[in-house]
Image (cartoon, rainbow, N blue to C red; front, side, top):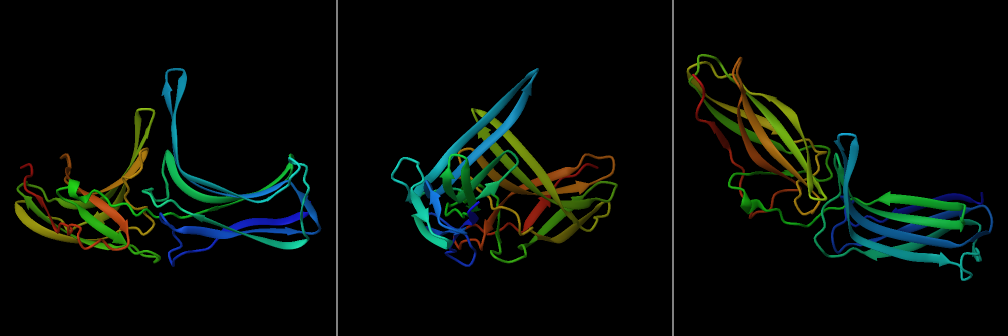
Length: 297
């Protein structure tokens, strides 16, 4: 083994370490050898893709639903022999560093995402081929952030949250709930963040959902009315809302329920859009009040 180290790295274009459409993805491929080494090819590739896949059991048959979309694919050959794979090119001993550069397409592409049954990934890969049986590979995932506008106008009531980029904290959101309790029991409001991942492949839809419990508000006594304000902290690691992928989408909702013994919970859900950074000035302002107007006696 003459190759002691093989890696690929990219240069950051901003403090966040993210890339967007139109950015230049550049970096280096590093090869460290202990002597002169014959190689067939050294190539670096950049790719952006979305992929979904899941299994569905139908009796004794297992059906696989899958789909894939390539957003871009670039390939740059750094070293290649001229003898059709005979390994005639030479890499010198020691540390060898090779530069590469790709301009990402300035088109609408979704942000990086890893979900239950699908993912959207952007990566740069390098491959050094010494022979048919001796191939070295290196990979670096590239965090990608979309520039797409979200369809805010399609929602009559919406809450927009901007997560702080590059900080280890989420965004606090104050929610005020007015509860008219005309029952003979006290009621307790509960707050949840609902995440909904939707995947599509071969005319089939698969949905994965989960609820994150935020906590409870102060109880409202029987035959009374109360106003409860709850400050909710959005987890900073949540991926942002997106709709601009033909095979998957990610949505959030704020869910508020009234916990009442022996009675089915009363529920209100409001769409919640999570962005990286602060909301743009032209976007709608968050709703501050949520009403439970009716309740069982």
